Length: 85
Image (cartoon, rainbow, N blue to C red; front, side, top):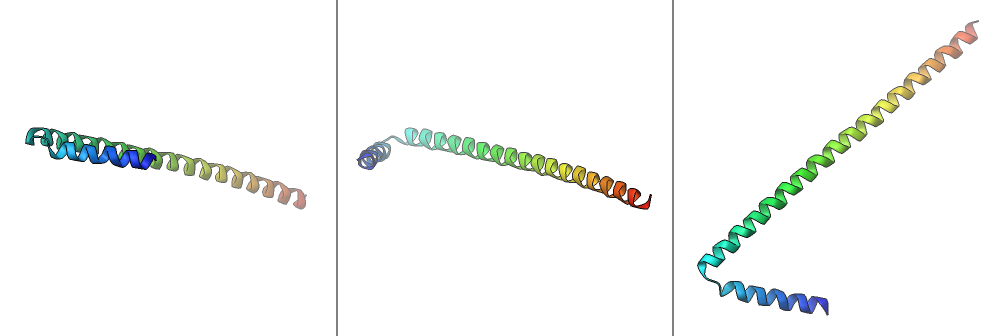
């Protein structure tokens, strides 16, 4: 039911746009271009934010692994010293 209503509205809008004057068609095209530019800018910003968050998460994971490795090295050294004593 919804799709039928949507299709009817879309058809009505298409017929309405085709009957518009050249000035109205140009304004519609300019509005569509502006919407496209905004959408592209938003997607680019989302991409950059996602990359920054990924870099931060991977950096934090790498730091945690380095700290864990250092602790294991310290434990290994302590065990080695105990065995020598």
